[in-house]
Length: 368
Ligand SMILES: Cc1cc2nc3c(=O)[nH]c(=O)nc-3n(C[C@H](O)[C@H](O)[C@H](O)COP(=O)(O)OP(=O)(O)OC[C@H]3O[C@@H](n4cnc5c(N)ncnc54)[C@H](O)[C@@H]3O)c2cc1C
Image 1 (cartoon, rainbow, N blue to C red):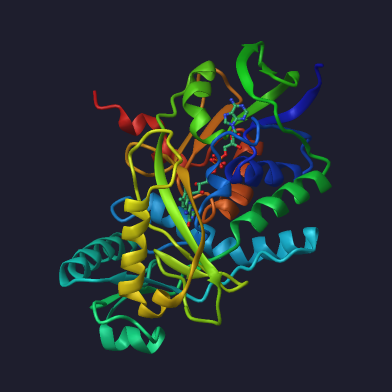
Image 2: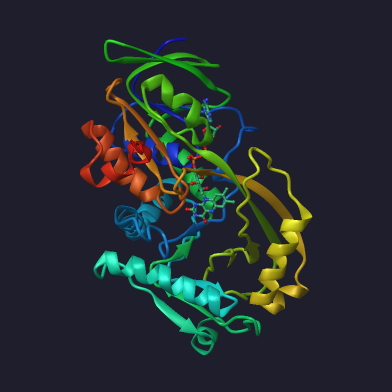
C-alpha cells in the first residue's frame, strides 16, 4: 500500500508522539509507524519526573531547553486533558535531591552552582541542610545530611501522558500503525519512500524518533544517532497514605498512592532482566532516606532501557544530504514532551531547526 502524507514519524514513544501530536494539531496529515509492542520502549518503563535541577549543568542550551519545557508543562497538560478528558496527574510544586553523605552534598552543590553560574538567574535552587529539609519532608532517616531543592521540578503519570498524546493525535486525524517496523528508507527527488512491515509510505518530511532504533535508521538519511541502551530498574510499593510530599530524584509517590523507587544506571546492553543485587541496593538507599518504607511491600519491579547519547544530552539533527529528514533522540522524553510538541514541531513545519537547537547536533561528537 502506498499513500502520501505531509510527514511520516518513525516511533510511537514519547518523542515520536509528542512531535506527531504537535504537527497534527497544526493541521498536518501525519503517519506514525511503530515496531511491535515487544520492542524496547523507554516511554513505557520510565520514572515520570518532570525535572530541571541538574539538567544541563555545563551545557547552557540544554538547561534553557529543559526549563522552557518545564514552564510549558501546565498549558500542555491543560490542552491534552481537555482533548482526552483524562487527567495526567501533573504536580509541579518543586522537587528534592537527597544527599546521604557530606561528599554527596558538596558534589551536588558544586554541580548546581555551575548550572546557576551559566544560567544568569534563569535557574534557581537551594541547598538545604538536614533541619531545613525535614521541614519540607518529615520522616527522613538519620543518614540524610541534606539535599537540593528546586522549585521548577515535578512529576506526572508517564503512561497517561503516552495515552493522551496518542488520543490527541488520532483526534486530529493522525494515522498510527503498530507492528510496522521500518526496515528501509529511500529518497528520490525530495520524496522519502519508507518501507515498513505494513507497506511502503511516501512523504516529503521524515522524522526519525525510534529511540534506540534511531542508530540503525539514521544512516539511511545521511545522519548519525549514536545512542546506546542504559538500563534502569524501578521498584513499586503497595498504595499507602501520603508519605512523600515532593518528588525526589530516586523516589516519588504517585497520585494513586504507590511509591516508585528507582535510580540504577547500568551499562549491560539490551538486557532488561531485573537483578536482586541492584534492586536490593535501590531498596536500601530508599530505606536510609525514608525509614518508614521498611514497612511497605514491593509489589512490582521492572527494568527499562534509557536512550543514551555519548554525553547524555539530546541529539537533534536535520539532514543536509536528504533535505526534509530529521532525527531526534533524548534521555528526558517526559520532561521535554512540551518542548517537542510546541517547539520542535514548529521548527519542522518551518523546515529548519532553530538556532537554539544547533548545539544539539550530532556533529558535536566530531573530534577532528
Ligand atoms: C528507567 C528509566 C527512567 C526514566 N525516567 C525519566 C524521568 O523521570 N523523566 C524523563 O523525562 N525521562 C525519563 N526517562 C527517559 C524517557 O523515558 C525517554 O527519554 C523517552 O521515553 C524516550 O522516548 P522515545 O520515544 O525516544 O523512545 P521509546 O520510548 O523507546 O520509543 C521508541 C519507539 O520506536 C519504535 N521503533 C524502534 N525501531 C523502530 C523501527 N525500525 N521501525 C518502527 N518503529 C521503531 C519502538 O517500537 C518504540 O515504540 C527514563 C527512562 C528510563 C529507561
